[in-house]
Image 1 (cartoon, rainbow, N blue to C red):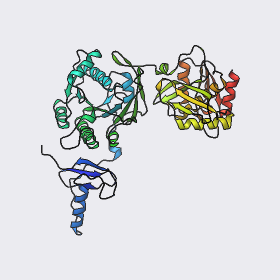
Image 2 (tube, rainbow, N blue to C red):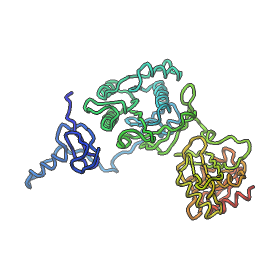
Image 3 (cartoon, rainbow, N blue to C red):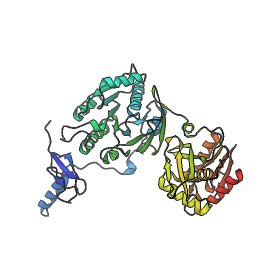
Image 4 (cartoon, rainbow, N blue to C red):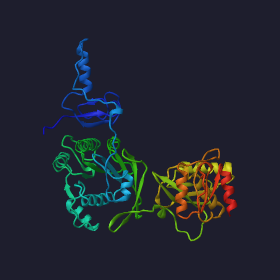
Length: 467
């Protein structure tokens, strides 16, 4: 294959340069020139401009044959066939399973379990009759075999190829035509058409683009493993996440046995869906009742603890919110783990202004048990009740839950799908709930007493009456 000419494109203005420069000659921006492969023909924009300027009023000739178009109503919409991976929690995150021709990007910290989960999934898929291929760029075939033995997959028939050159990977995919292929990882793959090192922005972008085109053209489902930066974001260009169909993040503390797989983007299913796994000696096992790991086991209620029902995708989960209020110095600290730090400061101000609970000279620490991250505002009410409980040293009643968003004016706003949250709590044995008035069910829920409130003052009064 003849080596094509490389060009450098400015990410700010789009200007093209034949060589790399520290400063873009067109817009003056620094460090914005990115290497890419030039097309064999001149860029369409330049050819269009040249032909248009040379036409001199004559009829313009099209550059290429026009593509076929159709009206949206005439296109037959069919459901995408799903291939279950053999892991219920992974299928939940994917929206039911893998899709033919789909491209999945999964990222996470080193050692979190990405390769382990994918190797287990490939083995299950292979045993169900699917043709699989595991392309490893970071380990040798012997290292992959050792991991398989540790996972109890001694006789696995998953095909393994240790290769990092893109052209060889594409040729192998085209020749073997597997149903599912895993590339571990995209940062190790490089193309001969580029001079930059593997893992660079240009290499990651070009390699991912070629693999995506291969998946769409042949129907092979490709799973890309991606590295993350120290901030936790996927390494490489942002366009990488736009190219693929599904983006999954592996979350969890390496010191804990529990792992969360969260869907950030999914063209074939719901976003923000999570799957919960437990790391065992035999690999990752799905957790069917994740609420159990997010609830501390207290023999008796303790001050500063309040259980809420959060919504992760389509799944309601019970999470314990813990708060510790202690006397602070002239500059009291506000620290939250698993919750928005800025929102904590706002809730303390609302608590003081509308409920008369002052924490101005107190250190306030808030934690979501189990390492889960809660981004929805429905946690507001539980956080405020936990803080008040810790400050006053009085535990909330046994079997108590609360959820609801609290506004700056002190109003308690409804949370989405409140009925499902209450039913999940009742199923797990919770008997008392403080919820927004708009979330109060029309029919009573058996075994549960529901207190509907409109303002934070009312919620505080309900809690005082329950003691």
